[in-house]
Image (tube, rainbow, N blue to C red; front, top):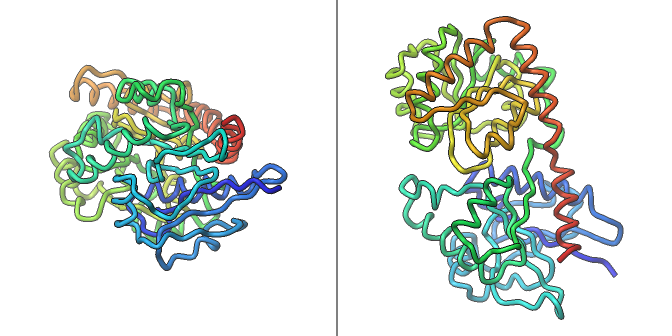
Length: 375
């Protein structure tokens, strides 16, 4: 008898979050590659034109709902019928049928994941409906989820505070960079086509307060490191706000290069030209670009936070700061020291690469299979 793990891949049909798109795709691919004997992976997806077989080779099938994603999202929030059915269901987000089911007799089980606690920590940064949806779905998870996956122990601990009813159903399974993530052989040409220089300091994020980009810019300006600055993952339309923050920090326009979300291979090429990544955010969220930097051996200078302390560990420099000003000062000093000599930069690169090997979608998939077997 074949055991089927059904993975919710709504983000591959109607993308709403680039990181969730990537996490969903990479986890599904790894689950297929690491499926135990007698097991298979099936996709659950809302109605839509996207071909999931191309995105996730080897899936056993795709079960489409009659509802498109927006309507399906509302149905899930209300707990009404969606046509998804039962079985072993794993969702890379809260987007799942969190309803009453019988795990013991029918062998139905539902596991959901949470990567970012912004709806609880900084709800004003999100549209009101988005924050409300996440809060409602977490309440449903407390009632009906067989397990909730967080990417770090610190985020799991914070979830226990937000939703104490989860009890011992919380599990920790980290994310990773995409399978095969590496600097491409044509990296220089790709950076040239993106209009980027060679040798720059990188930061990621946008102008929202929780992303700490203002402190990051002040740190780079104060460091005395006279290199170009590349900002990745800037939401379309937010480029002028990012430029204003850079200007206010004293970074001239000629040094600033702002880019949005890039395809995986282009992103890897950009990291290939970076001398360091400055990560100023202390938000309770999995730091995807920090993991990218660690994976590729790029020196990491990060704001100390419970998440960064767990993810970066000894693979980079963690900087304390009681407020934005002291954090920026500390990050700037750490960046200056990290790039002060070739030996210092090389040492941090080696430490980053060593730490980066701890993150793997294949390893995450093995833990997901083990979790469902345990349930």
